[in-house]
Length: 78
Image: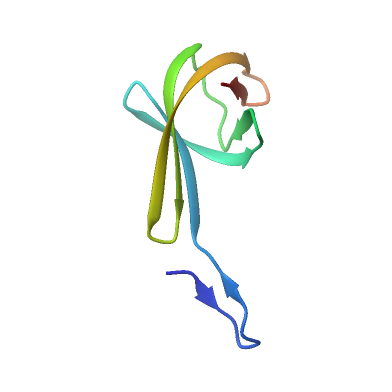
């Protein structure tokens, strides 16, 4: 569970990835309706699962990918 700092602060352990056709793609940056993958990969438009885990709490959201920039590894979703 997260990291505790001497000054009384706390840093959560956060893991984010996209599951597409059984393959995991780690996320470097995420916004309200787009994300950037850690490594570029050709991903087709369609259904995917967005997984976000903060410490021991995991949430999975079904998303639909609808635009991509394969050079930047950026994907848009709804």
